[in-house]
Image (tube, rainbow, N blue to C red; front, top):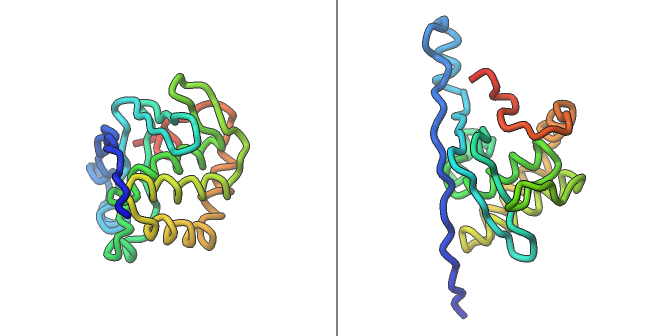
Length: 169
């Protein structure tokens, strides 16, 4: 039985320049070889996962999408590739431990890491029409996602933080 996928709008994002200009040789080289590209959402983006209210990512939100090592990009885990939309919401959720509804109100607050990881998998399956990328991402998050979650927990202030650790970019 074929399943018709709904057309899904892509978020409007712009790349933020890597910090190489006016830096020392080593800093430029590290940025060139290992720095994750940061992206800024330039227009509010709304997506409605099945069974949940519409979720909003506000304009100005900065993200690196999936923080997958370059080693895995060749097997389809490129941060700006198939995981782009799910990672956008996942990054917002890790940073805040809540989501915003289409009106900008907090919802699904305090659900925790496991909930956000599962929602990444769900959104990935919905957006891409295939389960494998989401399952690979959730397996990696189960093993390697805890340090990112704990670091985000320490940085939370309760306020909506659009810039996160990228504030100095």
